[in-house]
Length: 410
View (cartoon, rainbow, N blue to C red):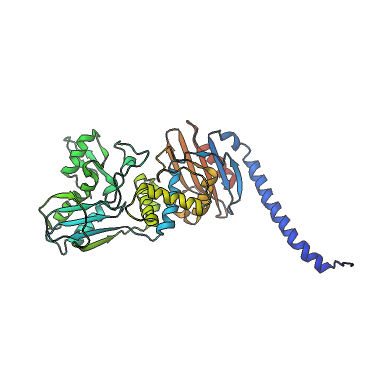
């Protein structure tokens, strides 16, 4: 049988092929141009470092040591944020409940709100004071998170990044103070009183000024919430005549009188957490995520289970070693290739990251570790995701970033 190829038929066949070859040429040509611009970048990346860069479509433009697992430090918070968004939703808001029992004891049940700060407790006291005139004991229920709650990498130092996690915490489980000219201790925050309860902790710490961390020893961190609230209630005319202690809410007998719903959405909390690289907030989010995925009580193990499940089924990550959510542990390990998968998924939320000089980014720092991940914005407002994991002691990410910015923006 004789087959005739007319002009129209020929065009139908060749036109799609032409565009296919054209776009392939453009893609590979852009990769070659980019590779040519980055001809010196390879020299900046050691055997214990990794770099991956993609274009706005997610196509990899440059990659070195992408499959090796390295310590991500605080860039891990991007994954923690992404998993929290998946399980909790951007509009999620923490709650804290307030009950009265038949002995006129005020009971407070925490659900892990990481932003239960003095300004919020003042507002809560004003609200409670409308109907309360006198209470006996203040009883604090932190049972929503299982204890002991130990975060790998967190030590017993007085540094804020070592603050412990829990279901009921105030001011990030820290007290900010300074020394007056007379040598006495005073609060470094006008909204927060320096209570005798906190002064005793300060004296034990041997810290001259700054922040001292409240621990779980003898329920110190949880009890601090009660002491702060008692102070603010007294300021509103509510007499607190009893003790401040820990206990549990009895749902069948105790009367719920107020539920504080956080004024901050999860999206706002993530922005705060990424901006200040707050380790305490990161693991509070991770533990709450674990509750959503696996049920109460919250635990680090459930949070890690949620991360691993999300990584496997949503990101197609086959192997990563994640043992907490802030990046403070050196046992966290992930490849630059898998970090790129995280960034591609997080791209719609890039506005939650710190932004300056045409870059949305998150940095990470541990001893001998410098990391950086985010998105470079080009002249057309397109976002190019990048991952830099420098695990060579003494090196930084700055030289690599300088080269990337020059190639993608200028």
